[in-house]
Amino acid sequence: MTVDKENIRRRVEALKSVPTMPGIFEKISRLIESSETAAADVANIISSDQALSAKVLRLVNSAFYGFPGRISNVTHALIILGFDVVKGIVLSTSVFDMMLARGLSGLWEHSLGSAITAGVIARRIKHPDPEEVSVAALLHDLGKVIIRIEIPEESSLIDEAVEKKEISVYEAEENILGFNHSMVGKWLSKKWNLPRALADPIAHHHAPGLARLAPQQTAIVHLANVLIRARGFGFGGDNLVPQIDMKAWEALRISDAILEEIINEMDEKLEGAEDLLSDNGS
Ligand SMILES: [Fe+2]
Ligand SMILES: [Fe+2]
Image (cartoon, rainbow, N blue to C red; front, side):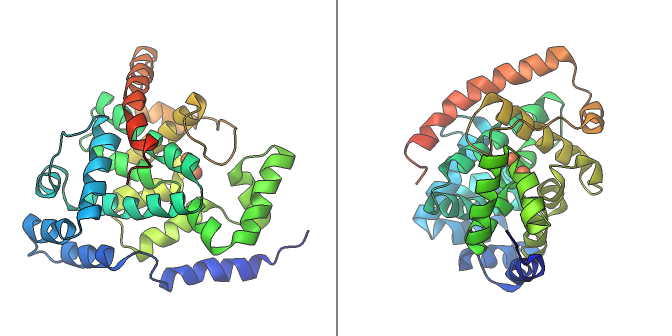
């Protein structure tokens, strides 16, 4: 089996100049970058698309709080959560659609479960912005779906290697492509101008020691990814549970008692999330 790595790299890199997201995301991004933008301006754009605002609200409530109705309108979401978080949520609704369209509902469940878990961890260790950490977790494996869409043949080889050799997706990607989904996520975060608190965990959730801009958020997303895989919720592309990075673990200073609380709360919240998954969140 020979794969032209350079060719693949060029093709994926070309993504950086391809508008993958719908126009509304670009519009919101532009608005947010202007310092004169008010919450109402962004809320108007999102609210003008009813399907989008319904998705945003459902995602906000289930991924952040584990139950429906806490945040009931888009303006409320913007005021409570801030522009960057809502921008991440709008992006997540597109990622969600892409995953479902490719039959990757297991990956979506993995992403949503990671977001819920990351929020639980963040609150327990009193991180100042748990919702932002949740969005980072929601988007952390974004590179996997992009690989699936942009290089489907290699993607099949990756699936095959995972199954035959019983290795992780990450390892299979490295073997076959010479890079992995977190690298693809990093390129796209740059293209979409994602804030560092989202970009760093997307780029480094498998190697949290490399996170320089948002190390704590990255450590939380890293741990959430391990816990949700250990819990067997959703499907991240293989059935292996990655090891917890010891430095990230130590930096989070989570005692055994707190870890137990985290796991219990995670279980409760995941049950609440089943609703969102059962009707595909549309
Ligand atoms: Fe990952
Ligand atoms: Fe993951």
